[in-house]
Image (cartoon, rainbow, N blue to C red; front, top):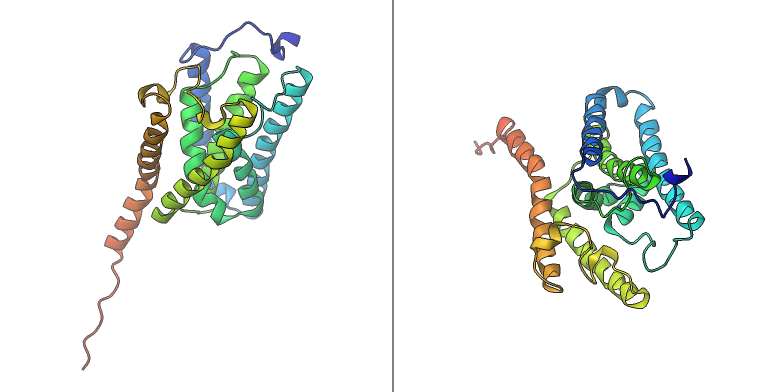
Amino acid sequence: MREWFDAANSHVFAAFSPTHLAALAAAVLVWAALFAARRRLRIGRRAAWGRYAIAAVLALCEISLNLWYISENVYSVRDTLPLELCSISLYLCVAMLLTKSRGIFQIVYFTGIGGALQALLTPVLYYDFPHYRFLEFFIAHVFIIAAVLYMVCVEGYRPTLKSVGITMLFLNVLLGPIYVINMVTGGNYMFVARKPETASLLDYLGPHPWYLLSMEAVAVVLFLMLYLPFAFRKRSAETLNPEPSAQPPR
């Protein structure tokens, strides 16, 4: 059992291996179960307890991860600070779930789903199942998306077109301090300094630093795609329930 936590474990993760595909299938089942239970979760105090439960899972993932870093002597300001986009989204999700903040939701709807989905499909991960890091990685990212879906399906929150611009502004403001921290620590948080060593979408976006501009364009397109279902729903609602026309004066 010790090898499940050993930082020197030799069972290396491989993208789209059977364990990776099984983890993705489990993720879809979790999201589908959440959607199927959405009406029952709205009854009484269930909505609040559901939010607290998801927040607890995310908090446990982050706390246990940092304890693992320390216990395995791999904690480093260069690599393990919670400054990746998904780590930032995780903290925002916990705050959103505990406070029901609509402002945080407008940002984390895009960063949470967009960032975590990319991480699940192309993980920057070095440990295979059943290693702790494998389990923690997938549980954390699955529940980041679950937190956002919970606010949509159970609490009835909706993103707006304006929030796409707000999210892009948030990310660009965030890049400034992240860039400075990377220079000071030698790290590569949010992949601002260089591309990740593992395969990712960045491999198709050009060399450094030009892929940073490509990332901006991809982010805008992805966020607009995430907003699209709500745009169509809003248009359909307006079509089915048109505002009454003004009556001419008599």
